Image (cartoon, rainbow, N blue to C red; front, side, top):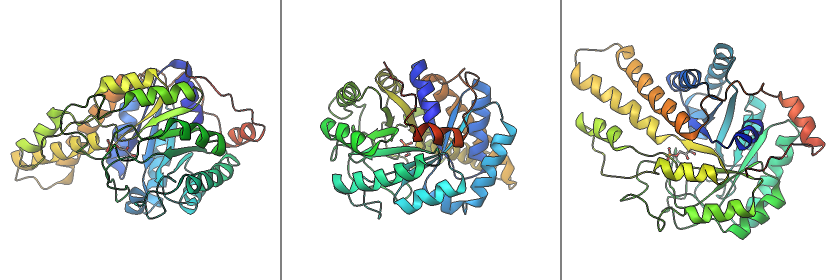
Length: 341
Ligand code: 13P
């Protein structure tokens, strides 16, 4: 992932990181990547690993790299809760891990700065020795996803810019997730966010202090009204809600954001498409009759985000560097650190 993010920094674009649990989601992402010629980050949470028993995920990802050899593809662990979780992901073949030491291993209780530094540093040492990239988190995101999260609103534990600088210095992380008011899930904002609820000024300040660190925006689904409407039109019960506007993400990309996490928008697209088939063709019972439209709906959202984030057209810019080569570069501290400016 380090290589993808360095390249994105050079080109001034962002790379979407899309969550997966099953075959259809992986297919949707890879098809969108091929259509838009995008490098891509596929990410799996602990919940996804347990849902897929790890081995299904592993072989599906092997199939993805076999069938889409022209796409630089990262398999990233989303919100690792402990050193052991990261270790098992690396052993399985993940090429990037997130050590979320902003929370204790229960994935719920906010931790201390010292705990976060200690665990993240440990993961960085272990990962870089194998060439694997590490993302850390400082401050706490809002909401809960796949059982992970403090369940707070997005503003309770904003990232302190001073602490962010110290955290990067002491851990050596490749990428940093910062809390600027976003939350996981569909219910992020009760109206279109303003500078009071989505703190882009804080992100810009952190980037100014850490111009060489790749910033990550979690909780960055836009929760589009049209996807909400399809669900509700076919019997769903979503309450009115707002996500992160694309133009704010694009402002982030101009200010050091290189990885953008999107899960909820794809969940909405899949659910809307399935509800539509169930409502319009109640006689259908072949799972393919609703999984195909679901996969197509997700692919459409992913392809659109790839274009909006600017990664489209960049798949052929470089050849992926093998992990062993990355390990050598980390060892010699020769990682080409690219300024985002
Ligand atoms: P969304 O719920 O906004 O899609 O965020 C997903 C995410 O940040 C995964 O880590």
